[in-house]
Length: 296
Image (cartoon, rainbow, N blue to C red; front, top):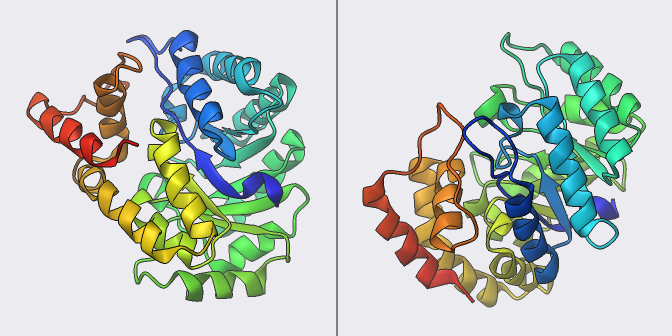
């Protein structure tokens, strides 16, 4: 479980218009995360635009990441693909390149059945032969894992964690209690959805899979460590500072906002992959103002 604990930072993957990864820019982002002391890096997650990248470009990104932070910060690699055999190949690529763990979402054009998802995960977990985190992200995949399916998958070799969306009713403790009755003792339950991270961490989840930590790792880590120490007042103070960013995430989607943050901070100049359009120019002042509230 130790791989899937604490703060996992999910950076964007800077590319040119043709989808060619800017490894120099990616390395700068990864060095920033490593220096801040994040517990892991979530490479090629949704924030990393994995679905927009070819197998070759994903491999280049993994190689650059391992060369940059390998042996210092664990690298968890997203290997989602429409076809099971493609996801298996991506999982093998990630292991061969030196990844520490895998993250898998059930991508599909055709809505998937539970048994199809189970067989897909079993095949990819076996092929990758690394600790794997279930990526429950219905906002993008349109598939929602039941507690029973998570429990069934958690019994498979190599499947060690789940990355959950925020519960609609906000009942983190109740949801985690249900999941823990279905899963082995060392199975890790973590959350994404940055604006709910403070509540999730205070409720006792093992990991925050964080979008904002991909560009503001020190600030996200401060919130994480305060929650791990049980310092509720400090968590609430830090979360209030993040609120203007959370508002932007909710309104425009974190993917678009992260590219605007990267440029505002002078970290890289890259646009999201088309057909995703950059944040409107009129909103950039809001991004800069929001950063002013939270930067350490």
